[in-house]
Image (cartoon, rainbow, N blue to C red; front, side, top):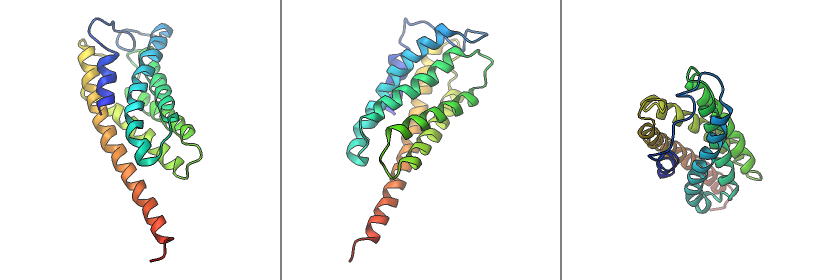
Amino acid sequence: MLGYVFAGLGTHFPGSFPVGSGVVTTFDTNAALYGVFIGSVGGLVIGTLQWVVLRSWRGITSRWLAATAIAVGVTHALGDGLPSSFDWPTLAVAGGVVMAIAHWLALSGRTDRSSLALASGIVFALALIAGVTVADPRSADWQTAHVVAGAISGAVVAVGYGAVFLWTSREAQQRASAHIPA
């Protein structure tokens, strides 16, 4: 959750300027390029804080950082570049697909790769929908809205990932226990 709050505040600080879907009527390449940059920085913050926890608990490698940075960067680029009339839930689902693919690639060699990647994509999409529904970053006070949307998205991700990782941990423990003689 902290990663999302830090990313929302750190890349949308007071004094920065609004770009993207709140102010454009057609696809804006410059806004998308700026979105790639700030989204990737935010994604790196998010991915790093997730990785710090997941590396010891689930053995997730540092490829998670790059995957998260790329996926958040691409999603943010679309959000900033697309016109304000674009449907947010569709963007969130597209972001979820990008996140799932990025994490699937980052989790190569793991037997739980598909379930973790799919879960990360679903959770990411739901988090974006929840965050933007409560605090629309296209509003006049877009800086505060980004921080609030980040906090809400972070809470959804924390609960969603936590549940998924606990569930998949128990599943692995049960499989291991079945193969260990009593």
